[in-house]
Image (cartoon, rainbow, N blue to C red; front, side, top):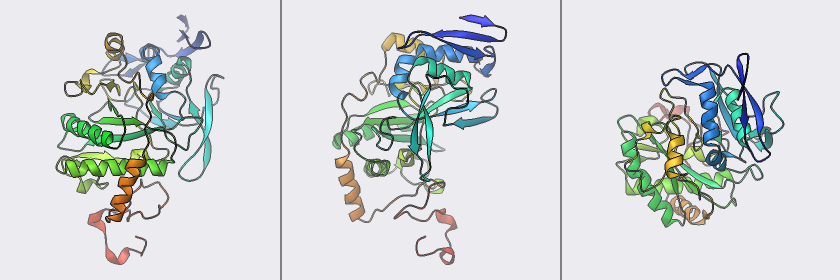
Length: 347
């Protein structure tokens, strides 16, 4: 590591040999409460590079960037900014608007460290690979505790969701969200477009809702959720992402969205999984997702459940507000604000 004025050149090993990555203002404190600097964040990424890239590399990626600290201005980068080094590539993806645009792809540790140099704190990978961006190879379900519930309420829901997915022939993995929730992922064969995978997620979420009606909900509108864990099916949509495995989160104590084993889930404390502690955890117990993706499943059974629910009168669920109106979608208005005279035949 070489210092030049108010910058540091960090030597980062990788598949093509070491690269020098410039870190400007290395002493700038990114996490004021935790006292973690920009250089320390870069060192964290180096220390977790192998499992981080195994989970997030070779995927279209959005960078959640901060101009100063996590308490300050933030913005998202999707396409490579001007001046990106040649080892940072991109892939053209299609957004819900039908517009296409190049999106960042990280392939080696130096590219992830470069992203930290650019102010990145949170990495948001797509559920699809760069070579096939229209067809996800991950089924993802975000378990989001609502007010009155917490991480401890998400745990039994995740465990039962694992059983639901197993009944559909899928092997699932779990990680902390880095906040109060959990993310359950299942590797799938990239045979279906995002809308089909979304329907598979809804089918699994509805089955879990039937099994645990007092504990979980698929209700899109907050006024209908109550004190339950929300199963956020809309995270399965095209261009919808969640923090990647081993990504830091922009919260005061510098937590990490950390893979854990199913066996340890009931005893893990997500507050202890931070930028400071996760490297040692990896050294002690290894990567809980080391074999992720080796056994990909199909979503045909979940799609059969989706069709069964359609036949039983359960239709499409609302899409995010920035999406174009989708076929069969219910009205995009809070139930408490519905006025019959203001609604068209299409809602």
